[in-house]
Each structure stands twice: as C-alpha cells, then as structure tokens.
Image (cartoon, helix red, strand yellow):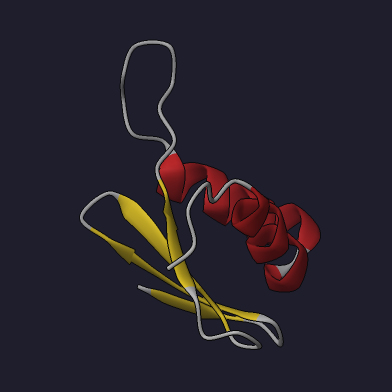
Length: 69
C-alpha cells in the first residue's frame, strides 16, 4: 500500500510504515500500538489522510520517525 505527497513517499509493509523524504532520500519507519499492544499504524494513517489529507498526514508521521537512514 503506497502513499505519496510532494514531500514524502510512504509504504505500509508488514505492520510498519516506511517513509522516504524525497528531498534528502532518507528513509525511516513508524509503528504505533494501542494500550493493548495492537498495531494501529494503518488505521491512524488512514484516519489522518481522511481528515487532513495525504501531505499533512505523512508530514505528521515523519515527525514520529526517530532514526532516519
């Protein structure tokens, strides 16, 4: 499942959202869990896209990346 904005590309793969910054070419990943330990990454991404659009949703998830490669 792929998502793309002007600034980022994202691919959801096996429970992990892999984000690529188009300007730098660096990649990072994000995985979110609820209080019961369930993976909620895709649900939160889809919700963010629905309410705020792809650009803003991907920019928000990019802020959650702790290590860019």
